[in-house]
Length: 427
Image (tube, rainbow, N blue to C red):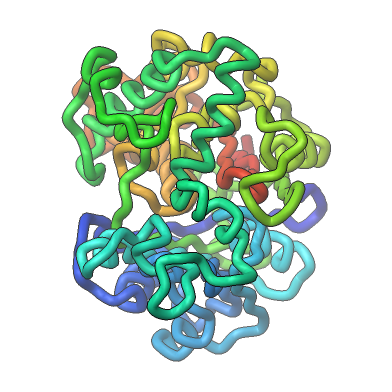
């Protein structure tokens, strides 16, 4: 996103996030949106764009969130630009589209919103994240709807993303010697980070013995490898340097420049029939992002990577170049390298495995909080974790030179992927 007019995140907001809140997605979305607008220091009248991720008909209940029209009407917005739909690049697709639109001068303050009610959908007579809970079925049928890619896997006992990711994980195990203990090291580190996050769904730490004893879901993935469905909404304001929301380094919540982006769709629009099951679309997205960037993996202070399942996060670490292909297992072994005090802190809020599945938006939210020095007990610095017991940190109370200055955020798995780099303005 290099060029004369900087583009970045100037405000963030979120609703309550929890299990089975029982509230409509539009209410959660408006709560998050208003918080983001206030955070950016602008008014609702100054919002001139919206970008949202919505799911198509092949997605289960609680996944679709809210559309542009509903949000525009609820907030009384006057828009110059909008985008929304299921075919965006990964779960960060709406942010990537907003950055591109802002760069093109189509809008100056764009609201990006993701709202989900998956946990409540589960409690209404079915599982929201697998096909029997409202996925792509013919009415009254236990089989997937004709024309859906699920028709090729459901009859063979693979109705869930857990099954689909399991075959990628098993292929990686077979090719490179990756072990369940490597997945466990990542999950354990996420829970350790979540124990310092008051907003996380699961905060009780566990060890390797408990991980290995957890119920298998789809070999080699166990329950603790799976993320946590939640209800909630997160919003961002993506602004241009022309907006009065733009604040340089030294002010309160300086703009976080979206320095580069990457997106890819690879293979067929499904999780099967891949030539190489040790790769996913994320490898192409990461290559494009770095090709457009002045940064490289060694320049990144923190990484927030998609962990819908623990193996996806390991795959992202390889795709992003933090370790060679096939070596993500040894890279995370023991958890020290990716810990809060490690050389590359990863998923510092607990990620989707422990904090809750906000479809990549939670990862971007955490990156912003860390780069603004407002992560309290789990705050990291460029030289390691802030002293134990620190709380209530803000831009004014933490040495700005110690805050993370760069971050990479990545989301998606299988055939879809999106990623971006953030740089604190003025750094």
